[in-house]
Amino acid sequence: MAAPPVLVQVLRERRRSLAGWAVAFAAICGMYTSIYPYMAEMNLQAMLEALPREMIEALGYDDMSSAAGYVGSATYGLVAFALLMVFAIGNGAALLAGDEESGALELELTSPLPRAAIYVQRLGALWAQITALVAVVFAVTLTLDLAQGLGIPTLDLAAATLQLWLLIGLFGSLAFAAGAATGRRGIGLGVAATLAVVSWMLNAIGPTIGLEWMSSISPVGWYMDSNPITRGFHPVDALLLALAAALVIAAGLRRFVRRDLMT
Amino acid sequence: MGHHPIEIQGLVKDYGSFRALHGVDLQVARGEAFGFIGPNGAGKSTTIRCLLDLLRPTAGVATVLGARDLANNPAIRARIGYLPGELVMTGRRTAREHLTYLATLRGGAGRERIEPLAERFGLALDRPVNGLSKGNKQKVGVIGAFMHAPELLILDEPTSGLDPLLQREFLALVRETAEAGATLFMSSHILSEVEAVAGRVAIIRAGRIVDVEDVRALRERAGQHVRLTFDAPLPAEAARAFAAIPELSALTIDGARLTALLRGSPDRLLKEAARHQVTRWSAEDRNLEELFMDHYRQTSADAGGEAC
Image 1 (tube, each protein chain N blue to C red):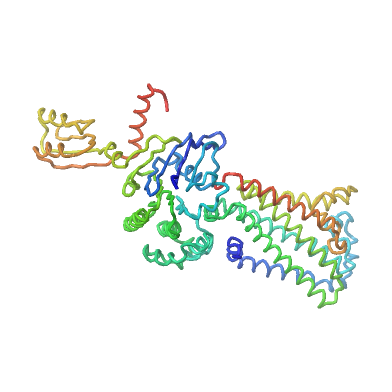
Image 2: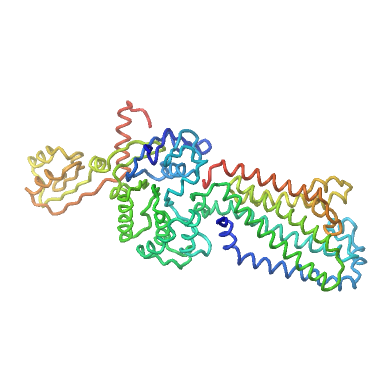
């Protein structure tokens, strides 16, 4: 069977940019994880207790007593999470709608490939890139954990990684699908970024004001709740993330194969 | 089989509340070189985009190479060569990578012709496409449209951006392709651009086909603006002699200067002019807009002055 040509071409053209992102993720995750032993010595927990409790909870910095709690808050809960969101939403909106707006997509659209194949292969290229970056985050964190003997439970880390992958895939797919449905990159960006922020705020603020249901309707809540690593594997939440992604992908495809293109 | 490569019936296309096509009918026969002319914004590109299934018609049917349902027949495009009006090529791709990718999308068809065609048009294949001049981009587009020897070529404003030398090479390629039996459908807003190759032309204006006819008949009917200057004012009997020439209309004689619209053979005009001393002459093909004005007047006259 021949390789999917669009997927191969997109990945080939993005390989340099992807390599740059991978290096940045490795550096940032490496830095955060490797400073934990020093922060543990400084008794971070005591320092944080001086801050208002609501603020700490909203930031997810409520469990600094273990490496799992720290990496869950700082890397998986904040830095890697936010950067992956930026990457996935930006790329998701650019990959189909951006190329349609610039006219670069015309080559594929006037080729013998069906529209659905173009959609699926470009989406595949997005997921492949997200997978590569999430794998970098996992590999760097795991390596430093083992090297420094931080004692993060590997299964919990793997579960958090899987759930992170699904969450980032969901928002990347949302940007992609909203862009594909409308042909406007700005709409893809706007819809996905707005929902990501709202979703993060529901999860961050809900519990601090006693409205726990806010977390449970938020995809960010399905991923991290209060801490993505210490909470471990949650099959129902993982399934919800996967289903939401499938729904968004199907809706975008349905619209893309029916509408006028390159208008 | 018996079908026409392009068969358009009652094609209507709305963009929101704006109607871009008002029921276009067209038939292009196998092996025909067909010109599709009209001013910018008349609906040429909209029609072409419907043929490629980029746009879905509001009403009517476009049948391409026997496929009535274009949405479910994307594979039909393997047999079409399409040259976009404005080719967009982004990224650091080289021309070779761009064309190789296009061949891959077509299942590999035409890959072996990239090199010889690039040589023929003098295109450097290893330069990044985003830095190419308009003419060089157009060469990439031409090679992409022709390399897989398609049955049907859809060319949107094909010679824009090509310098005269390349235009000649392009027209030679078009003729070879036509001789090999391919069907050509080329759009332009300039009649002379399609005149060199097209047998028949359709004229589209404001989303309606206003005329389909032989390109030579059209050119003859279109006529030329003729201007002659003599060394002395023309006497009255000479003016009467010019006025009697049936090929001339809109004749004005102002002292030593004569202007007229010539339709058909210039023979009688030249013979009459040669009786006098001619100091300057010019003959200019009328442009498309003027032809539209003719059509417009004609159709309003036919319809009893009803607006278009």
